[in-house]
Length: 249
Image 1 (cartoon, one colour):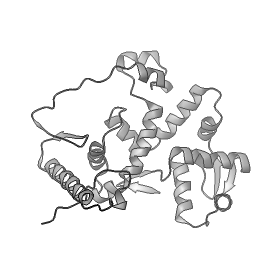
Image 2 (spheres, helix red, strand yellow; image 1 turned 45 degrees about the horizontal axis):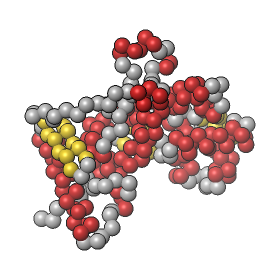
Image 3 (cartoon, rainbow, N blue to C red; image 1 turned 135 degrees about the horizontal axis):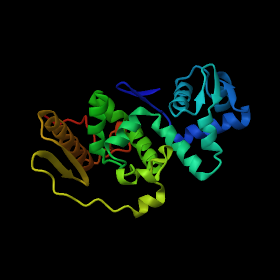
């Protein structure tokens, strides 16, 4: 089970979790022991990788049970919906079961945040150490992007009456027609950094000044590595910066 602070989140992508649930449903008629699943996936019964996959299925609400795993009704609605709308709603429900993703979705109002904003958001929500946040951010960012593709942008208050309680989300065609947000000048009482296509906009406090310094140091260290022809650090694969990077004294 992957964790950041007090929040657990799936250690595999939603599509991979659905594929495993589908195998359980088709090959084992919806019920399989952990040992049987280990055989099916070619893993040792007590392996950490198997444990992480099972935990991810539970995080998304796709299986129930402990020693014996049962494909949930939610998973069956994802795999075999009666109509496309039911499949979309079931998938949205699966993502909303992950509390960390739900909080990030609300914080960023259904928009995919830039890398810096995501790090700041994860720090404020999880209160986890920064090295842990940087290490786990790439997968969390992928989860959030997957979730936003399904959930879309939050429904505006004036349009909520047009939707039932279980359908308060915007379909893909609504997203295409939604007006683009207009750019605004940054407020004068905040801390704003724009560099290499990334933006950081946070309140002007001593804590956030420390965050900004760390990010600028990381970008400087990365530029030095590129100039020297050195490879990027493996820990930050999929990210263009290193929050833990330090300047030479």
